[in-house]
Structures are given as structure tokens and as C-alpha cells.
Image (tube, rainbow, N blue to C red; front, side, top):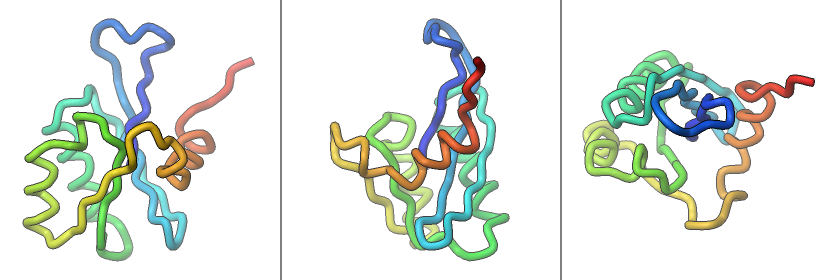
Length: 111
């Protein structure tokens, strides 16, 4: 999973994000908009995605952002017997499956 910011090049102030959740085995992707990176927004969006996926989530893997690496998400995963892993710091290719969906589904090039 990953968050994509929609700040238009100016990260100052509040702006929306898209949570992208991609199943590595099937490529199935779900996106949810969140108003910010607050843990309650991210977890609520992940909860919604988990409920509608056509198969159970065996695990989640995220980058090292504080919106993911926190006690609250760890507890959410533990309560559901979901494995929680993270990418290696500085290794952007660890999330290649979700990053591909970010570029194909979430981000658009205007030109």
C-alpha cells in the first residue's frame, strides 16, 4: 500500500491523498481518497478496502512513512491476523507493484 499526495507541487498546508492498495498475486487494486495522512483516515480507508476485497488480506506491506509505521496500524493488523511488513529505507523499488498502479491509476500527466 502507498499514499499519493495531491498537493499540486506545494506541500504546505492540507491536501488530499489517495491510498492505493494492490494485491501482488492478482494485481487487484483499490483506491480510497483520504483528506490527510492522519492514522485514523488511513486506517478507516484500509478497513473499507479490506471489507470489499474479493479475498482476505493475508498481509500488508507499506513504505516507511509515519502514516503507516505506527502502533495503531500494527494493532489493526494484529487484531485481524494480518502480517505487517515494510519496505527497506531508501529502496523505492520495494513497492514496485503499488507504485506501478499509482502511475497507471492515480497520477495523471497533464500536457
